[in-house]
Length: 197
View 1 (cartoon, rainbow, N blue to C red):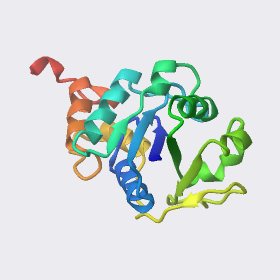
View 2 (cartoon, rainbow, N blue to C red):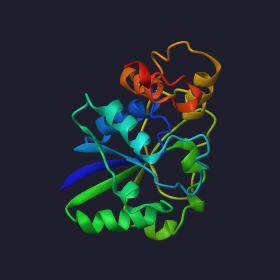
View 3 (cartoon, rainbow, N blue to C red):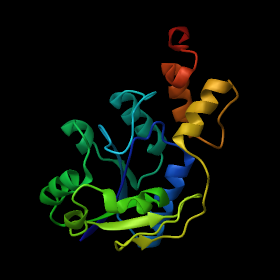
View 4 (cartoon, rainbow, N blue to C red):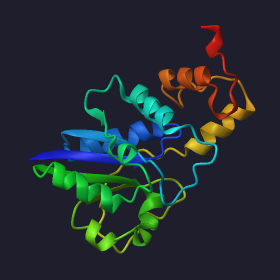
């Protein structure tokens, strides 16, 4: 049976912390692949100051393009609407009955797992895999498979704020291709230099 990790998120933008977390889960659980799945409209987040769905998808593609065991799952973007994980996993399990799915979440999401839509039914569809993040307790009354990984206090919010405050490069925080794309598209308050190409 294929063992697939699913890593959902807004990826607004995707950064090194996302890649490191996915890589550690891939290695620890001996997964076949990890799919990054951008949300269309997450129920727990406001997408203000967001790139478009197409731009977020492109940034994910650029972030993982050199890593053969990282793939993109576009199901939620194609379906549109609010991206409830239960609905997504029900559809993916029906589409791929020979795949065992592992849903990757950070510590902050573990803390709020009890609030997820139809969580009891969702627990029957997937194995949740948790990775601690700074500032989260990573505790839940639900069964979560914990994976140890280096903790980095980096968020997409930090990246967006940093881009608005300075033109200094984001080397070590973002894949270079993602930073180049952000600046080319003029995202998050950067200067749009697309016309100079």
